Amino acid sequence: MVRDRVTRGQAQPSHTANHPFSWRRWLRALWAFSRPHTIVGTTLSVGALGVMAWVLVAPGGSPLALLGAMAAALVPSLCANVYIVGLNQLTDIAIDRINKPHLPLASGVFSVSMGRWIVAALGGVALVLAALQGAILWTTVALSMAIGTVYSVPPLRLKRFPFWAALCIFGVRGVIVNLGFFTHFRQGLKPESMPWHSIPPEVWALTVFVVVFSFAIAIFKDIPDLEGDRRFQVRTLTVRLGPRFVFRLSLWVLTLCYGLMVGLTLLGLLPSVQPLFLVVTHGGLWGLLGWMSRRVNLQEKSHISRFYQFIWRLFFLEYLLFPLACLMGQ
Image (cartoon, rainbow, N blue to C red; front, side, top):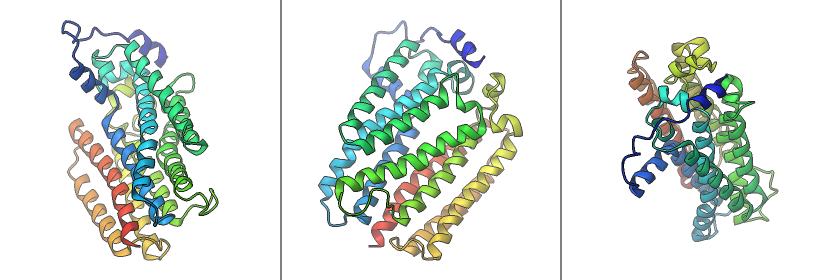
């Protein structure tokens, strides 16, 4: 039913139809289509895992070789990122006209055929470029794209179900990205260093943190989309249990993330990090999270959206703080 409604509501006339084509306008629309916060997250995660592979496995390796490997892996990763978020927009046009009317497809800046062309082209480029760099990177990129496809596209359209939607998001962001890219970089920097399946405890700690954090993002992201999801019968956790319950659950999950990282550090289970730095930064961020949460009025969609972006910034920050803690611990 959702698919039928979306299909019938596809084509609004573009408000740019009477204007001459402009590459600047088109690139701005493409940037919005790519969902910039996910682009930033992908870029930081690839960079962080490259640095961690260098620090934990091959500290004597060439920094230039590392930068080259990270740049080469980043291109197919970003293409896959746009494929995933673009596909989601193509299947949610009618819903986005309520929840996110500024997006290019929802506003009519991009036609449906243009959106499909971008998704297909970048999806193909992602798979080809990843395959040229080896089986590990190709598997990482292909799995991410496959999960992104079943998340959005009928008949499965797993985003309709809270458990499966959350599993898709933290499965990709947490498990596949962290373990896949670390293994890819480690094999490239020092293939003889250890078996491919042997992962240092610091990488496992970051992976667990991101998995749990991504679960909080997965359930929180539906709070500002309540109106559209309810109208099109997308039974998210927010639709079923209400925004206040989901907001509080997200805060508890995020508190667990920071508490877990501090606890692992204090117990000495992360030998390669600088413990004081990690404890102080994560304790401070937990305090900031609590302070910011008290300023949110759940009746104001703008408050919810700003806090959601704040959560994403905390997510980005982890991919800066944790590699830095590893560098400082050497």
